[in-house]
Amino acid sequence: MRILVFHGYLLGGTGSNVYNARLAAAFVSQGHEVHLLSQDRHPEQHAFVDVAGDWDEGTLRLRPVREPRRGQAGSCTVYRPDIGDLLPVYVADRYEGIQARTFAECSDEEVARYIEANVAAVSEVVSRAAPDVALANHLVMGPAILARALGGRVAYAVKVHGSALEYTVKPNPERFLPFAREGLAQAGGVLVGSHHTAASLWDALGDPDVKRRTRLGPPGVDIERFVPREPAAASAGLGALALRLQAKGSDSEAPADSDAFARDERAAGDALARLDPTSDRLVAFVGKLIVSKGVDLLLAAWPLVLERVPAARLVIVGFGAYRAGLQRLCAALAAGDVEQAKRIARAGRSLEGESVEARPLGHLLAFLDDLDGDALERYLAAAASLQDSVVLTGRLDHEELADLLPACEAIVVPSTFPEAFGMVAAEAAACGVLPVSAAHSGLAEVSDVLARAVPEEVAGLLSFPIDDGAVEALAARVAGWLAADPPLRRRARAGLVETVRERWSWEGVARGVIAAARGELDDLQTP
Image (cartoon, rainbow, N blue to C red):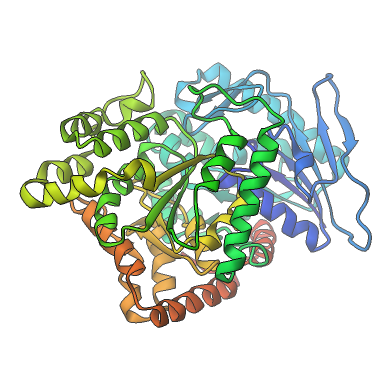
């Protein structure tokens, strides 16, 4: 089967980027011919890509990036449309060779040019490849682009990732809701990662027909790559990753210190080399370093974890505009300067950039305001070691997480904003790592599934409420897991691994996308 996929962003990192890369790889492994449109400038770095195409010289140019695979019928061509020097995004980000600006900050003319350029590219690919089915990603603008380019000739599905819905369409319905309606009107099926995203989508569109065509289509987990490892193998894998990154970094120039978005391989390798899984009790955070990911709550909770488990170390993996703010908060807490920490909490999102509204971090501020007496003294005594017990790696590629996660004992997903699906939580669980997630949106739905697979004593550690008690609740769950008896932990780990392998695989995701595009919805799960 020939399948066209429109993504429009990168093929590595987190979220929808990983979704599309792994989905394309699954299609190829199943023998399909994939035509994927993205803005990734290095598609040859992905093993599933055979041919890369672009319009940089005015007309479509295709170039093979590897020899044809023996014994495999599937193939993938990745195209990069020429959209000029502006890429509209949902959350502030940086992209190589192009200016990224949020949709809300783009003018109507700029959005129109972006759509027109992508429609032209998709139309040419369709005329050359004659796809049987197609997939549009994000609520805007992928579905509208496909609707215009396909003109009813090719059946397509839409995969709604949470970012476009929550950060673009819902805050700006007058501008962007018409595009969403246009793109969904002709879709055979609409896929969402969770019931929460489905309910949010239905509320935003107010269209019963969209509700009728909505089905669950969460991301998958590469269950061959994300696997548990014995302690010695996990330690060796992490050490090898550190060495690889250090070697890569020695051949390239380090990015400027002010660039919170760039990947510094040498610094990442050096950071990972500081970790020793044979003595450190490793807990990870993986995600963008932005306020809505709740990483401030995790950092504030860490001294409470250290009080109970002094050997605990927190590994923060990610990049983003709040990295400097996070480092300032860590320094203030380590120095015992609670008043400075409160000022950082009151500044809130303004530390992500000069044009960002302050919006104080209320839950963090509530925790800091309540600290006094003996509790404050104990907290500051434990916080004094924060600079040593918290390690920021910067950005890691998705595949590299498969060498980090098995060396960890828990991962925390403390997002304060709705998430379509807890993808990193599921990948961690596949490695036998306990995911401790915020109790809302798609995260809660993943936690509920996993809770049925672990002993009752562990089920309550999988999630925590986002409220003024979040810091203490988060710390209690992480510390509780680290202090649990080994037999209990072994039983829980086995249940996590088995459940992920049974419920979430990319092969199943790929089959569901094809069925949704064809409008064959009866066998797909309703939210």
